[in-house]
Image 1: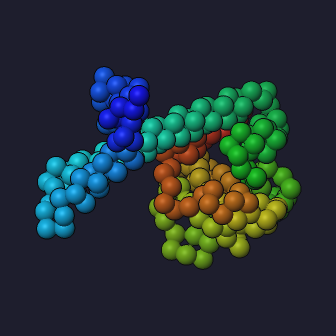
Image 2: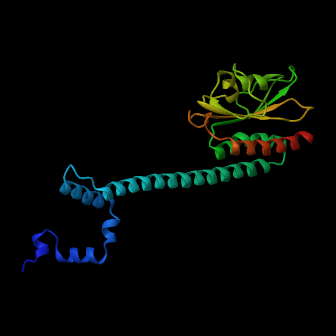
Image 3: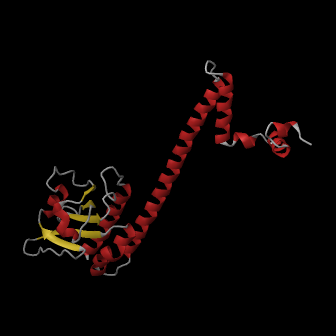
Length: 234
């Protein structure tokens, strides 16, 4: 026997389910949009359905709130991941038992942890002691070299500023390989020692950009400074 529901295109089980649980419709945005559009078409072009407009506004607001929520979650996850990465890198720096091992671990262990292609420690020495070693993690350069590398022909920032930028020509020999972006972490070794520099390089041009935050890198640089001073005092 054909029921009225069958004539209207809705079978009795479906109709009964919707009547018993209307939230099935409310939870389906596409279905709600279709219902609102059908209602407005039935009213005609000269009639404005305030309820429909209100629902559209609420839906738009909900979309923005969900997007903001996802952004917050994503940022929190990235921060947590970044913090864990920095902690692993610091532990790797603490493991060597001599200065040679400390230097060796920079490129061999710490660089992969930080997901960078090069990691160089630049220190200044007397001119007769300075030498360039493009393949080495420790670069001994003449006095004044750190300031020149930091400025790279531009107006030099404050001495303690971390710099994230495109790879500069001035640092190419220090990296020893082709990189697209780099991070420079100035290391203040005190009034009796010349400044040093921790140089990171990546083949990814978006790895280091001026718009990125530097909190985690600053923390890493501070811990690195303390570890390096410990070795230099021995």
